[in-house]
Amino acid sequence: MPVEFLGIAATNDGSEVRPRSGAAFDKQYTLRLARAHEDHGWDRVLFAYGSGSPIPAAAAGYLAAKVESLQILLAHRPNVSYPTYAARTFATLDQVSDGRLTVHFITGGNDHEQRREGDTLGKDERYARTREYIEIVKKVWTRREAFDHEGAHYRFQDFVSDVFPVQEPHPGVSFGGSSPAAYAAGGAEADVYCLWGEPLAETAQQIEEVTRAARAAGRTDVPRIQVAFRPIIAPTEDLAWEKAHRTVGAIREHRAGGQTPARRRSPESPENTGSQRLVAIAEQGERFDRALWTPTAAATGGAGNSTALVGTPETVAQALLDYYDLGVDILSARGYELLDDAVDFGRYVIPIVREEVAKRDRERAERGPRTLERTLSSLAVAG
Image 1 (cartoon, rainbow, N blue to C red):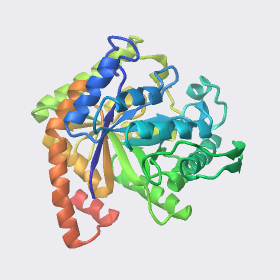
Image 2 (image 1 turned 120 degrees about the horizontal axis):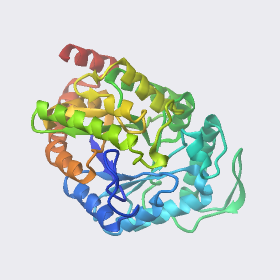
Image 3 (image 1 turned 90 degrees about the horizontal axis):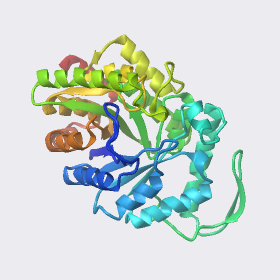
Image 4 (image 1 turned 90 degrees about the vertical axis):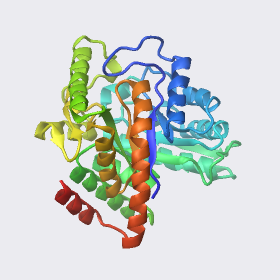
């Protein structure tokens, strides 16, 4: 199966290791970073969402008009706009981008962050609302006749849109989460299910949960799986590990100095299940499998995509291929120096992975499908 690479569409040059140098929305930097991804083999970039941050849909529209082939993953929180309005926004962006849009629906795992924009629902209620929201958006994207909706969270009558996506039947729907409520909602509605980087065994378990939820929802297909990492690469293993330890030191110094914006800080005990899982894994040890390293996650309290893959480009590429062998075909990667790391990863890691995926696909076609159990068993023997 083909492999895809997702990078980040940051609107400024700030990161966990240093403050930004300019405005929150730096148009020149946004475009420069996107073109670095487009020129170095990446498939798409993510416009993330945060309360108080630049509006990702507007930034995505700007970028879509400036780059030729780079695809866009647009993060969206259902609490910030009505689904009929959001669906038309997405359809318009799909038109602007000539069919290069995927939408990542964020339910929200932190009550305080959600309340910043007036969302007072509890987590399980938010997942139920997100599922209803996605159902409505899909209808708006595909129905040419007016329809009514009477749901738990949304009610409207006689709605029909006059703008439709380029993509048929509609743009891709991306979703993430690690709780039972998340698996149920995403398993039912997502085209892509997003996970944070965990050890191989735990990742396999989550893939099984997503598959089970999709089957329970009556689907005959299952979502594609995306896993996210923070690669730390260097020409030698020793240099990579020196860089990794410097990075963690910079993260801790940055946070201790109060330079991390309040909206990005994580509580000591994170509320969302995904972050709790990352913190628990970090407490079990620092290194897992071929190259997974957890101190970066521990230093941020499991904030989002925060586990690292450390090593030479060859080591990191082989680690990514281990996840590919589990059934992960979208690999999300973001370094701590956004621009330089996007270029280096594109130059030195992506070509190795693509070449090996082509080789694996040929071998897989010859020997038939492989179960998760067989894959994990072979990886254990190799390790």
